[in-house]
Image (cartoon, rainbow, N blue to C red; front, top):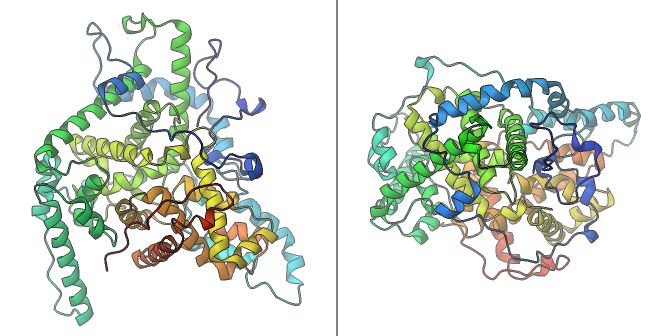
Amino acid sequence: MVQVDRSSSASPFWRTTSNTSKSPDNKKIIGAAYSHADILKFDTLSLSGTGSRPRTPPSTTHSRESSIPAARSSTTRSPPPRAAYSSFLSETQNDWNDAEEDDGDIMFEDDEDEFGLPSIASMRRKGRRKEPTKGKDPGGTRGSSLGSIAWRAIDSGDIAEERGIPNYPTAKKSEGKILRPQYQEILRDPANSLHLISHPAVPPTASAKEIEEHSARISRINKFKRILQASTISLSDLRDSAWSGIPSEVRAMAWQVLLGYLPTSSERRVATLERKRKEYLEGVRQAFERGTTDSAGAAAASVTGANRGRGRGLDEAIWHQISIDVPRTNPHLELYGYEATQRSLERILYVWAIRHPASGYVQGINDLVTPFWQVFLGAYISDPDIEFGMDPGQLPKQVLDAVEADSFWCLTKLLDGIQDNYISQQPGIQRQVADLRDLTTRIDDKLAKHLQNEGVEFIQFSFRWMNCLLMREISVKNTIRMWDTYLAEEDGFSSFHLYVCAAFLVKWSDELRKMDFQEIMMFLQSLPTRKWTAKDIELLLSEAFIWQSLFKGSGAHLKNTGSKGNGGVGMGPNF
């Protein structure tokens, strides 16, 4: 979490001297900027998870007023939300430019990545220094050299390697994807999209296997349509069907129902959507008014200068970190290079952070919002592939507002269940890393012992697996498929994710057991997953389900953490 000097003497904005020279705060939340060396000594950590689990405040008027500033007095004319937002950006741009050089040093630090791990570039430099010595090894016992690992990085799914500041792409009107003519009906009620699903004809040259696959896909879509068109949606039926994957044509609505954002009752759906979207847009308006309202204005008259300074410093420090992280998000996908996309993600993350002061913004949350944003945006576009050739800035404002609001609330629902991953000292991640170590020992003792002998700590590579839910290791499309199953599981993003990480690690066992420390770290930071398809993800999920069925509830693999097993094995795939 971004740490801010709250003292009344603190100078405004982030022009203050970097806090790195001060003694470290033992309560700070480090997120994706985490230095793993700080908590390698597990004996000093509390992994028992004592105390009540923090929860996101309920979405009530009271909780919203307590976390978002009250609306301005009626005597002060407030600018429209997007006008206020643009004004806020223009007012703060100069201050950011003043610190541009300092930010560049942080963003493009070559010795380590944003997770505190040695960067790929620095490890390759060290490897090149050692290469002449390794080249003289007559035995050739290492099946994986640094050169081969460098080659693997080209095939890596790790987006952390691509960190340039993107120039906004430009798309002509003719290059954009086609907005559905019925988008206003879908805005009102997502169930209206179910009537618009069309199935392309089978090509005359299709093989028997292709015809069978086409028929199976149509049957699967129709099954979801029957479930979602019911007056009261059966969550058990929807979860059972979603475990094996949700067709893209119905995914947006299915996700919103599974997360509890859309009511299962069709009678309440329209009113709920309208209310929640208005609530979010009002939250955006109030949040960015704080950055545009004159501090001497009537709206701030009742607030002391000291309190106003502390609040402003906190908000702008959070905003500053978000503005750095968003351009880094999925830089290899054109969709996330457009200005409209980046501004939308910034607003979602900023409003979420100020509504959740217990955690604030933590690096890595910017990754978690992108599957929602991409899936919900795709519901209004005729072409399901929107990662390229789709400039959201060409779409109607009401569509972007709806996608943004829906993404915000669904991100909030997701983080409700894993918020202890992001609060002070991040106990949720600490527990999961310890559990992964013990679970790996049960599944593949040879691999666990090899990692131990080479001095590899699980926190060094699996922290970001937990912090970003493996989104740095696999593509957004594959993440979306994986989340179909996570949403079908009762605790998919916490409990089941642990078993997915175990299956993911054990998958590379043969390669890892031939490597030394440096090769292991380089390999795990640049895993060859770029060419993975949905079939690879489904195989990974199936293996994770096997481990969950064997170990969940036994508590045997948690013997060193003091954690208690949860009964049951969860819902399995619907074969």
